Length: 101
Image 1: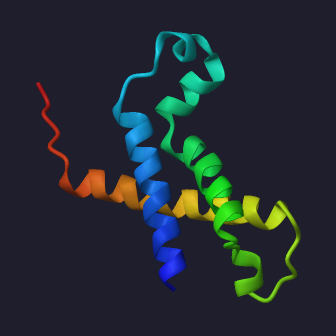
Image 2: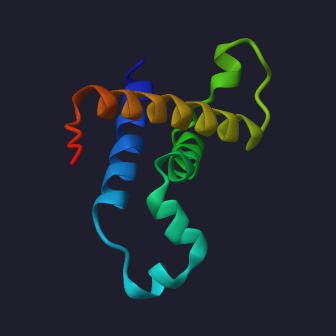
């Protein structure tokens, strides 16, 4: 259980810090990295998939499926990124101030 918490918090912190700071000039010119910088769901997929690989965490074995190398980490990254995306959107909708002029 502790590994899941560390995995989740580390991934969300990576997304937060990646999007908080501006990209260097060379990376800003790259369209792919520029789009990743804007989209938390997109970058979260890569961040959580890589973390799942290094921390040996996968959803498939938790739900009774076989472990398939790389595919298990990709599925774990997709699911975790989508869950955090929904949590983030819900948090923003509930607690952000919207000013209509």
